[in-house]
Image (tube, rainbow, N blue to C red; front, side):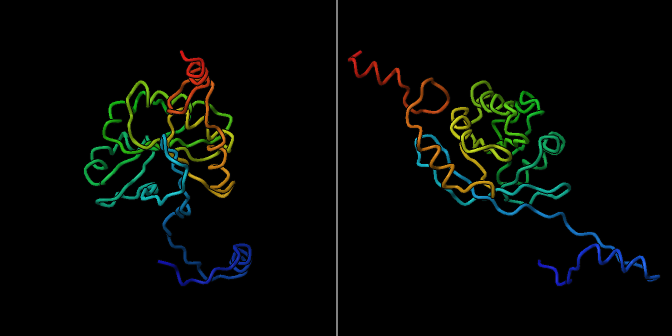
Length: 207
């Protein structure tokens, strides 16, 4: 619910507080939630398209709502996984480059989403984590990337098994979709089903 309190710059409040002997009221407010992001669907064989997102990233200490689609940090999931899996309709786990993805293996069959949180676009550890989740641990849910990645990395994310991207204000959805559509043929095989150049050449030669 939107607050009816009228806000003033904090510098003005501090100035008045220093010159006043009256006590200043302080109250707790719930943490600010990030604004909804567009989610670009990169599912294999489908046209890249933005779609509504039912997932909610829980704030620290926030209890899961019964029947909701919730995402929690991996550290919290390791402690509260029984409660989360019992209450929520679907559970996702957020991991960063420093998280050991092998520790997530026991639960991958019960997760509907893994959120790859890129802190720095030059950090390639999450590309490896994505491939491990798909190839070694058999994760079949939505593998989503968010954070500090650039449009040119969208194709490499797709090739690593990523199936959706959270798109913020850094660049529009159309830019990412255009980059993904621009590469219809690959040089090497990976986790995406796109054609590989060598196969097309062999077919052209009647092999």
